[in-house]
Every structure is written in C-alpha cells, then in structure tokens.
Length: 253
Image (cartoon, rainbow, N blue to C red; front, side, top):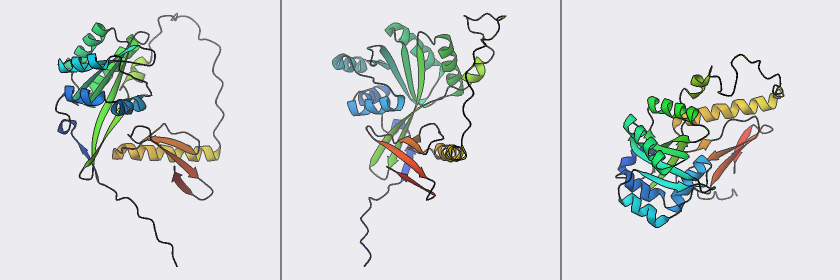
C-alpha cells in the first residue's frame, strides 16, 4: 500500500503591485517602517543594525510631515532614511543632501520604487567624493501580492550605474601621478577546479534567471561552492540551496 502523501500548502499567485496602492504617502510608509518587524526587513537587506533612539520623537517628526527619518546604527551614528513611493527625481536628490547636512548624517538611505539612471549616477559620484565622510545607499522598494489576501515587501540594494566606469583613470589624491606603481601585488588566485567551475556556472545561471523573473527570492553573489544562501523577504528566515553532484540534484533547507 502506497503511503498517503502529506497535504501541501496551496501555492498563491505572485503579482507585483504599485506601492501607492498600500502606502498612501511617505508618512504612511514611515509609520510602517518603524515597526520593529518591518525595520528588521530593511536591516536584513542591507546587513545593518538600525535602531530607533527616541520612538516618541520619531513619531512626532513623522506627524510633522518631515520627508525623512533619522535612525541610528550599531555605533549610535545617525542614519537618514528617505522614501519615494514612485520614481526618483533630481528635486528629491537635492533635498536629501540638504537633510543629511542638517542632521549631520554620515549615512543616507534612499528608498524608492524606481531609480532613474541619472540619480544612480549621481549617488555613485557623491560616494566617490565623500567616501570618508558620508555614504549614500539606494534601495529599491517592491511590493508583491500573494493570492488574494497576503502581501510581501522586498528591499533590494541598487547598484550605482557608472560608478566603476567613472572611477577609471582617477588618480587618488594621495598618489603622485608620476610615481611608479607599488611593486607589491596581490598573489594570483588559485585556479578553480572543474567541480568549482560547474558550481559557479550553475549559481550564475540561476541568479540571472531569478533576477529576470523579478523573484522575491534574492540570491547572494554566485560562488564556486556547493551551497548558496538566499534572502526571502521575511524577517528571521533564509533559504539555503545545496547542490548534490553525485545525484544530479538540488535541495533546500
């Protein structure tokens, strides 16, 4: 007699929705974000330990229609957070620079539903200029509906377009343009084994496919190892995928 199969939870349909369908205004989003379980989602996405120094004062600031929050990181350093529920624009970029100066923030997190190329380039340029004093981080906000009732939010750090290209050819201030390069060089890395290369190729292909599909599951950077971790946009939970070359299979835990 075949064993009875255990009941599986019903899978819901994923649909990406406009953030303004859930949050009516930036202030509405800010009230949502300062809830501990929601702030933890942002912390996990960025690898930070942001905290609220004075909850009552923060709520008052939101009620005064300030378009930003000031939190603190693990070292009690002020971190400014601002949100745009739609597409970024140059006006907001100028405002967040002014707000950062007013709050003496050394870190600025800009959350938006969509980042224009111009704003990405500007953030990369600002990070080059002020790397030792202030950093700017762009975070894409995604909102998903699961089935008819459940919803999930996802925070994804945004790569700064053009940052690498624009940095080429720039001579550091401490360097002498006519000086010889440092003879000390990093040792050449060990070549990958055939199995490591197969692992790297597999993870790279999987990561590309998940990115193209806009999946809620966010992988780490492809590695030559057999195990790769994935964020699933839920506080306190991560997915680990493991390759089993002996059985030509992939399993998760």
